Length: 256
Image 1: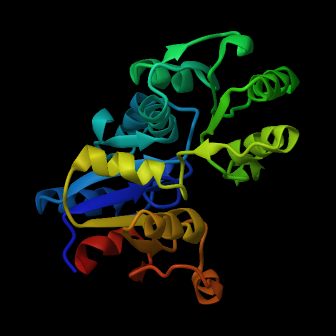
Image 2: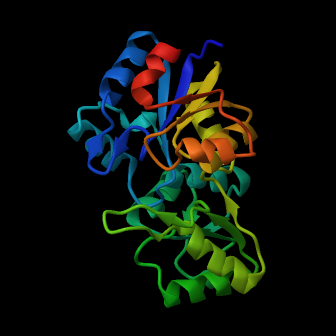
């Protein structure tokens, strides 16, 4: 199979912590030289696309802002597409709010005025934000969320992810959020809209989010063993299968 469009997960695939996966920069450069179009996808609902462009540049990987598909951007686009003209209460980081503005949504600050609650989830989320979210939804607002990740890795260990906060609101209201982040299809579709028609391969380190999510979106996926999944996880996995398992992204050009 020949792929001319490649979607790359970031954390665990392109970089680990504050450093690039060995060979990542060279692999990405090789793909570009062959004319493969790239998009970089992340479930992070907090950071701006420009932040990622700077972060990747600092580890020797040049990525344009318009090659990045963050969870914030994907969710903002989903809300704008499915609820045009709606008044949106966007709760999350400054980047989360800004992406909704860029998507053309009309933002409100009062839950009583909201047609849509769009919940990103970050370290500022507390009881007041939980209360506001519950009241907005029980008042009739549609519920959109970033992603269902229960945790995310940090240097000190796992921290609660956006999915944990969204689950709390779902439990309190009995309403399921419409999410855009992996493994939901919204983020994959935004990446396809960005890159256009072609033959796609998703490359990531998670069987549930990256491989199963790509499968749900109708895309092939490759798994790398530099992040969440190891060989034992692959052997035990009974979900959609990757087309190939690679030691790292450094092996991707040779595979393609």
